[in-house]
Image (cartoon, rainbow, N blue to C red; front, side):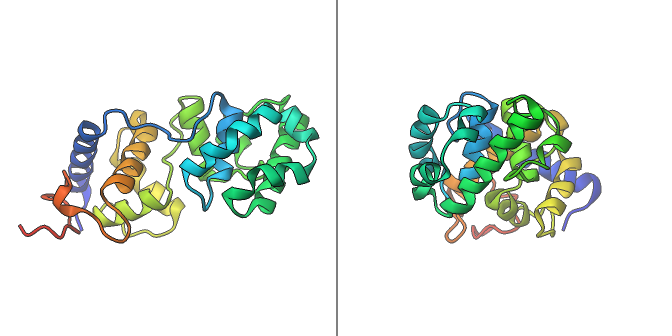
Length: 216
């Protein structure tokens, strides 16, 4: 595994190529404000963004803000989000989030990592999603299953814990690009570097990826 300056150079070349390949990479959870993004990200656990985007229009039509969601009957919330899976746990998280936003933050989503991670349903990954995409703040790197998988395949880190993966990645890339980096890795993971059958023959990184199946 590469180390030091060689690893940084390897990481930056990966980033450069992915940025050229996916110039429009962005968060694929539909949202109009920080509240909607926080809710959608909670719903995305163990669920596809596509499915979440089918559910959230009705959810936000009924309960467009934290105050409305706080007052919503939990059974109705469960019914609306049922198709996203684990709907009872998610409904409890959403109701808890709404209550905390109303009672502690005036109904608004806070803009700091420390304030976000203590909210129901909000871990560091979700906090990074909200900070990076709703507020334009690069406090960390979103590490989902795609980012974790690609980080290992690309030889960027041997860590397997999401927090350790994030800590390993942060020094390798310019801070201003952390939010966008997550999108690039996620898009590549969804479109080319599949978990079961990566399409190495179609990959722009095949010649520099230590996990490639393409003969050198």
